Amino acid sequence: MIAKKSPNPIDKHVGSRVRMRRMMLGMSQEKLGDALGLTFQQVQKYEKGTNRIGASRLQQISHILQVQVSFFFEGAPSVPSAARPEGMAEAPSPAYVSDFLATSDGLALTKAFMRINDSKLRRRIVDLVEAIAGGDKR
Image 1 (tube, helix red, strand yellow):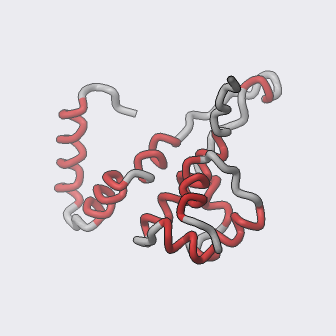
Image 2 (cartoon, rainbow, N blue to C red):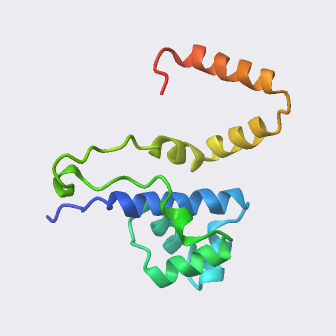
């Protein structure tokens, strides 16, 4: 039996950014697939990082989703320490933010939160969520 290879972290990140942007636009996987001439299953595989997105396809997706190609790499995981020159430290990754925004709950919460005009109320909501979540402030 051949062990299933796990997706490359960059491919997963790019896929999650495709998913996040598609959801921000309220677009279905089927609609994106149609625009690309693909099935929604292929879009699913791209979004999970199971299938790598080629450069020309990523350019096409960026046009359809109305963002620059660089958008898909924002907050991407850094180069593994084994491939980094000695003495180069790894910066903390903001991946948890994009992972959160790539979920339907994260996107809905963010959109609703941004509609609150009262900055003091927004701060109180953040304080409340931090109190409910416990100590681990990032």
